[in-house]
Amino acid sequence: MDIATYVAEAGIEADHWWFVGRRALLSNIIQKFKLPPDADILDVGTSTGTNLRLLRDSGFTRITGVDRSPVAIQFCANKGLGQVICGDVCALPFPDVSFDLVLATDIIEHVDDDLQALRELRRVVKSKSPILVTVPAFPFLWGLQDEVSHHKRRYWLTDLLKKLDNVNLPAQRHFYFNYVLFLPILASRQLMRVLRLHVDSENEINTKWLNRILTSLFRFDVMTAPWLHPPFGVSALVIAMRI
View: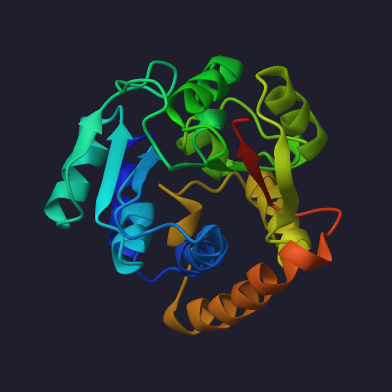
């Protein structure tokens, strides 16, 4: 990502509706895995530390982060979120079958060879242990945030499932989320494109009152999406498992 995008994210991720809601979604899922506090957990693509915050607050004590950006790693260190190793998702610097849980949230869309990234996730996770993947969904939702984040693609959920099958990572569960705000986000991205508006991050387009409203809407979204299985959403989530 651009440095300005890291700066924008680092300043808001603790309280911004998107990060708060996604942490709630991931927390609910991780709790159901019933992992012990000393489980070995890997967060791939830590960025400025939103998942590290979630894992720490959930009581886990053996958390490893990896990111290829020295800027992201420094932000995590400044926040006291633990040590993050410099590394690439396509060549993870860890032995085979090292982790009880791997998080790869909004990371594989950043690399040219997403199949190799998925192979690496499979390599480092233990047998019958979960990998939790989230990606931006629907190519027609491409917008400013994709550009400043240096995304290579957005995904149809069916295509992501095929890629997981290709690397022998069968999906155990999958669904779209952020479906409540799907149409407003689609409309706003089209408007920004027409008006040629530019900001360092879409996440900066926010106010305190708007953040409160969107936080409530997104909490409802992430509570209902796992069982409602909406046919669309701004993001997609898959729980895969090495078997």
